[in-house]
Image 1 (cartoon, rainbow, N blue to C red):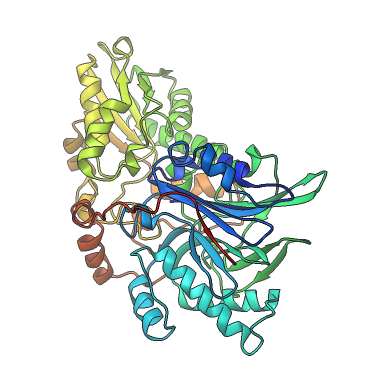
Image 2: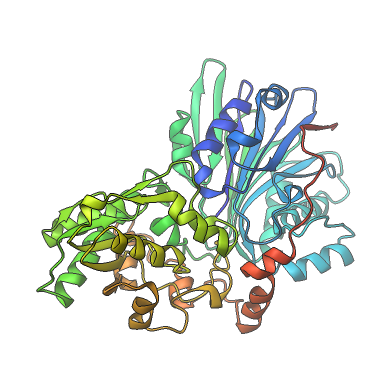
Length: 508
């Protein structure tokens, strides 16, 4: 669920990349990085673990000069949490290429072996983003053939076609090629989001590509379009945007969890308003509750801030029940869903939320959350509501039960860590300690999103339905995930911090 962006400007882009990363901070709080290239061909890179505000200081920004650059905020799924795994990654051949990536390659291990054996390239980290970078670099070599000095758009698009042929999974990629500009492409299912736009300045037109439209909006860029599934675009140093459909056989199936939780509500993802989708989720969930429990005794609807507010407000209006803010959020604690490690998530819930006792005392409370993943947060919140004096505590999830791992770039890899896996709704209700529990129906969730863009009729709903759109995920793959990417596995492979923390410069 990482955040990526790139800018081709007419003036130094470092400040705009920094501002864009802060807007995308919700997509990754583990690490951040910015890479720029100046007019002398020097690549300037700063990346490290931490929030954007803690990674970049004045001394770093002063050295991140140049009119073109890419940036990334990391939320670790594949790989470790070492600073060495922070993005962007860089290789100096051919031409000099840097890459930032959001998503997950489902065939990363086989690619790693082939890159070493067939491409004669070395992978230095456990990140699949470095694999993508080296595949791209090798495919550019192949596309060039004997013409090793002249890189054209035709060569680039041919190389990206090669990447699509070799790389499976969900991915949105932003890359900088020395002397060319920024290229961006999206997997053939459009699982992970990517959007681009422009702004006109006195010096000329500038371009930006980013994970979410809000990053462009905040910088004054006008939207051109979402990058289509299987499409590649070139934002050149000079001239107009070039696009090419690299894969003909595509299926538009964006990740529906972007609408549920990942994206900011003020973003447009594939032409769909995240805010309006969450409104419709609340409406449909309210209709389900009214249908199944017409004589309910709910006194008040209280959202779990922040993502569920929109759905909770719509639910309260349709049920004719008061809406109240019962939990106050500590703005300086990160999103607990993306906290590494179960113990840290447990600790963070009570640091993150505090109950307003007056809104709970003696009342039958309906708590609304966007989803229930591991159940750690939900259980503690139900307990907090009871401690605040609630008479009865009901719980509603605006998403269906999360029963299966998401393998396309969201940190819910081990089925055993998902509270809904192999449990009924009644058993989950008992686990979190609520008096009643309601889940959104999957079709209602799909309808909530597709109403925003009727042209998209299919979504990746794998964590709810176990239907993996790439068609290459099986029980053997799940077993590997269980052993490599569960909380316990992550603890065992924590790497030592890198000593290379300051801005480094690489000559072209």
